[in-house]
Length: 115
Length: 112
Image (cartoon, each protein chain N blue to C red):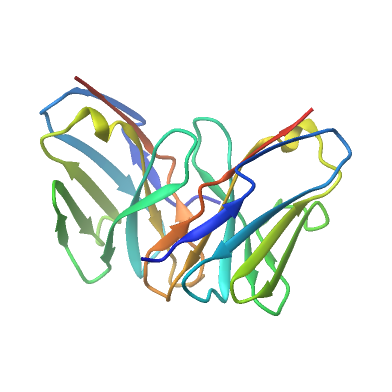
């Protein structure tokens, strides 16, 4: 079955540093990937849609300069949290469709803690 | 923005009982999906129901969709302690075709 791999599964960083999270589709090509953010005991909030070969589409209220998304190939999208602050601490999850109108496949998420 | 809403927010039942969760949404959709999330993990897809379908079954899961009321329900029959998790409905939108937006979720606790 389709598998989406996300790395790292957790990261602790200091304020002001940048953190890169990788999302890979392992057995299918994903022209579109989605990045979600989840706070404790809350639902997933869509941050941006990552499009292979073009700019990401950000949701309202999400700072594109803060959360840099690069979808350089059909199997890899990266989310870089730049100049991280404690309020950026959260659970970040990526996902991808194998095809439109099919289920989303999720990575296992990245727990980011900014100290 | 979230277009789905779910109730109840939290549900606690005894093992063996059935659990029903409801989801409402606001815009026209192509399909609606239900996902499960164990604490601190990614999401696992349960069922996808298309807008032209009214009911779907998968094992102990039964999903209904009422597009006239813009609502869906997830029924888990004969619940087990291992069903303890958060359950989310998610919808795409006919106007924003590629986006999948999640409801707030229902936290289910199944007591052995």
